[in-house]
Picture 1 (cartoon, rainbow, N blue to C red):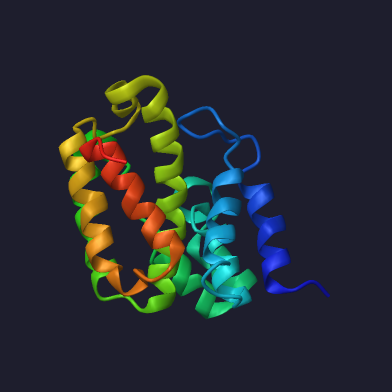
Picture 2: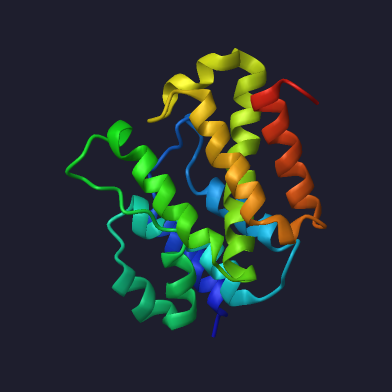
Length: 187
């Protein structure tokens, strides 16, 4: 019998099949990278499973009930803490700030496990953003729903503040460095 993490990887591979990221990369690499980053902070297989599954409810036809049925209440709750209400009735550019404020409200009072998931996710995103920023500069923001770098900086700097209890981890230090590099032009 495979463990919960192996099951989550297989589930996420199927859920994200054929998807690509904003930079054109294969989508599944992002949740796998997220889990790899989280794996530098914990070896708890349910947290690692949630890391791999973190975008399934938000970005695929998978439902929160599917996660609960397949992985149990702890994994489902962790995935829910990473899932935004995308508001299909609103254009993404109009709902961006609302979604981010709601997500940050969850993060602010979240436990360490959720904060680890967020750090894995956001560091993976920031690695990709920094890589493309170094290639094309501020034009990289044109691919996002929120194109204003100041708003993006607000979001990432608030995350850094809310997950500060992870500041001794190398992943936090890397995330902080990349945020500074992309938004303040410093290395």
